[in-house]
Length: 438
Image (cartoon, rainbow, N blue to C red):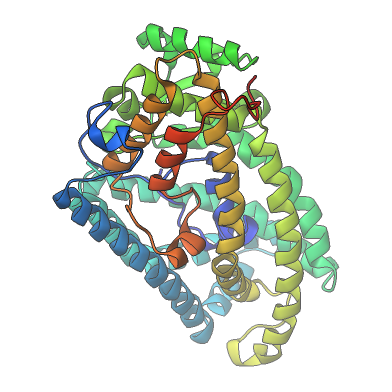
């Protein structure tokens, strides 16, 4: 699913990082499938042909540049919206449309959202152009723009009540608004996480139960879940038709409570062997069993406490210039772009902290997956290493990211590091106790 073009949601969901943290999804990318047990895998190294290595490096570098350019462009867009007083004009229209605050939010929020989304569209389109150029995506421009429009619509539907709630709290408690809004966000975050796999994800992809079309894989997965002492019902396992839009391979865990599920992309099933797919599933089951989604909610809710407190302090200082910008005060609808600017900068500056948390969680899931398939898959270490080799080749993963890029941008350990760990992790041979699966 393309990222929701809603700077508003970035404020409410900690700079847009929450969705990635909860999904456990890897960065996408394309490429052919190597054979299992190739020389590259057997030597515990992520190895690419010279041509593919150059291509992976070029693609990765382009994406890194795009990330920072997109951030700077986002800042410039918001500064421009503030400087030319776009928000006060939207506020005046909203106030003229209705005396009721909710309907004012229903006018104001979509206008701000649309202006931001349209101005952000060039970097979004360049990102898709990169994915087509490097054969990551097979999605045509018409389909991509339709997904972009659907993402915008979803953003509008979510943003209207959130903006209304935020400014209702701001009007009642201009000094402590950040605390009351922080408390109100927890049930909202839980609800959004619960409803996403049921109501939002199906707008972009089709999901089918895993067992009917892949009975052998479902049977082997059941063996893995039983070995881990768990029970993941077959109706919680789904296949996503990623191949209609992407060449990459992936899997993820999503949802909460009754909506919690493990999703495997159909491209993963097509390109990986069953043992390799079991490693991918074992990794996602690790997120499921180790309660990574509830823990991520706790982490990000705590993080939001700090973010909102800082936003409140900075907002008071910035709005000392409010008359210049046509903003009446902190509770004025027109102050929203200032809040979004603070959130955008804070979200970028917090990336190392947030990504460090997610990397640790992903490593835990790798360990769980390795332990879950041990003794169920012949030469499980080789199968796991082969799965990472395929993932790297298919997704054009950077073979050697710089320390700064790893620190700032990586929400998974580098692919070469994951492959090396998979090929060498052997507590059983050393007489040690496994961490998670006996």
